[in-house]
Length: 212
Image (cartoon, rainbow, N blue to C red):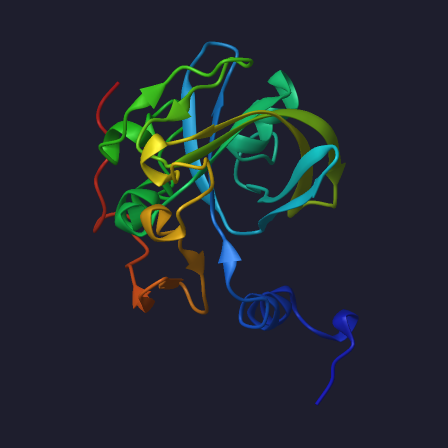
């Protein structure tokens, strides 16, 4: 069976893509706005694009309900030109999903998820301390793909790896790292131990925003 993309609805294209391009790595992205407020959000339209230079790409969904049509992550990257890609381990799956809840702008998702911040070395947005790997990134190119999507290409300026996931020779111990990837549907993931489910959270089942 085959399809012409222009004959499919957006939802049909989405389902075909996310159920065939598997598994997808997960970027837990931290950004900060001009007031220094930190936003944390997960994205699985993400991957590393090369090592010379070291670059990554993020596919960011827009928010047609916001005043400027952008989600906080996209807006912050476009304004500040900086962001951190934090890579998660299997034990962080629920915290990652909490960060995916649509909290109001200015609400600190990392606090709702019980995550701690650590200062970055070369950029302003902080890192997620519990994440075993973090990439400090500078915006290289932003592509406006229409009302529903931006694509961001970032140059990795600084890399952090938890000592606990390194061998004595300085290589990555994949078992200690225990990474996961996004699978089909809204709540399926895969790790070194196989597939598992982690519920996608939304109000009112997820943590509620605290009052400012």
